[in-house]
Amino acid sequence: MNALLALLVRDMRVAVRAGGGALMGALFFLIVVTMMPFAIGPDLKLLARIGPAILWLGALLASLLALDRLFATDHEDGSLDLLMTGSVPLELTVTIKAIAHWLTTALPLVVIAPVLGLLLNIELRAMGAVALTLLAGTPALTFVGLIGAALSVTLRRGGLLLAVLVLPLTVPVLIFGVAAANAAMTEGVPFGPPFTILCALSLAALVLGPVAAAAALRSGLE
Amino acid sequence: MQLRAENLACQRGGREVFAGLNFALPAGEALLVTGRNGAGKSSLLRLIAGLVRVSAGKIELSGGAADSSIGEQAHYLGHQDAVKGSLTLAENLRFWIEFLGGGKPVEAALGAVDLAPLADLPAAYLSAGQRRRLSIARLYAVARPLWLLDEPTTALDTASQARLATLMQEHLAGGGLIAAAAHGPIGLEGARELRLGPA
Image 1 (cartoon, helix red, strand yellow):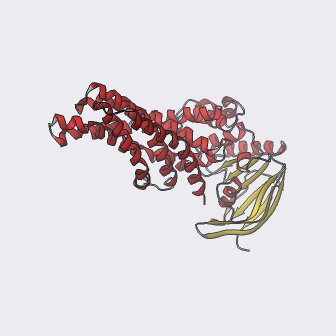
Image 2: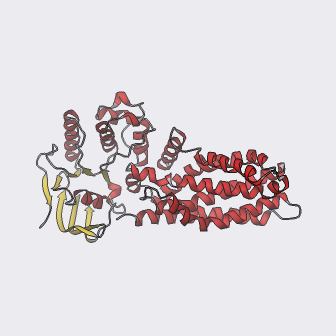
Image 3: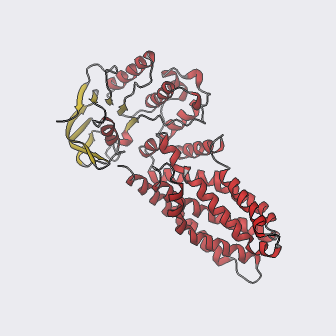
């Protein structure tokens, strides 16, 4: 237990200190969402209707952007070798790294999403719902992205390959996330079903992601 | 406790690096692996640590913990030092001590490699030799029976090399095993030599 806590603290410390890339995802999210109204034009009704979709797409791309550093930095300085020969099972090690990554990269997205919703003319009550769907759905993005990060760990510029590998698996998360957010904005459309499916996707990813990622890391050994 | 290899073979990138390797290393003894560049010294150490797949034969640590792999009972000191530049020396070492299951206090381990005055310095400012000493502090702090050292004296000054030799002798005296790859003497008197190369 102590070992896992030590790993969590160390990963978060590295991410938060200079050069760690903690707010990289949040900044990219900010850029994408800020540029959207300029690109779409001053059609407030249109912005309000597609607002949740823009926020979700921005969160998805921001998550993918930050993922390729998940294992790459440890691989480059030799830490990954030692993490694999620790007495902690690799699946747990990988889970802890993903949790640290989610806390430093995805949680800021959830926090600033309501603020960015103002730029997209989303109603107040809908903003809370969008943030909630992001909170429930970004773990799925992180834990599924874990698999792509593990598969592309030895590649220098593995980011694009990672995105290609992971994107198909993130499509259901995107669909149900936007569906839940839209349901919160529209009267008469139930919020429960898409939201619970979103939670289910996250829970499934929480279990399958680390197992697949650990297997990918092991198979990457020559 | 004994580290035994039977008919061990290794392949990297589709090319056979070595084959038909046999040795037995009892507790309290050291194995010095020598050979020209590319002979497979690093590959052998990584194979023992479990970081490279065994393509034929077997390697086992008899007398060790039955349900742990060899890698979990060994310290692997590779070419890279597993040091995070944005953390201080103390934070780096404390993390590895806690992750690998606990051991001596950080201050004592830093003192053993004479890095105690730099404990709160961000590791990015260390020289190559100092980073190597920080890795050696990890070996001193966490007790594991087998040490796998890949060219451990690289970048070390003479005082640090002498300190490493002392640490290695103490480890062997306590019943540990060492397998080290090197191009020359590293302070292990009476070590068995395993020369890798063409048959």
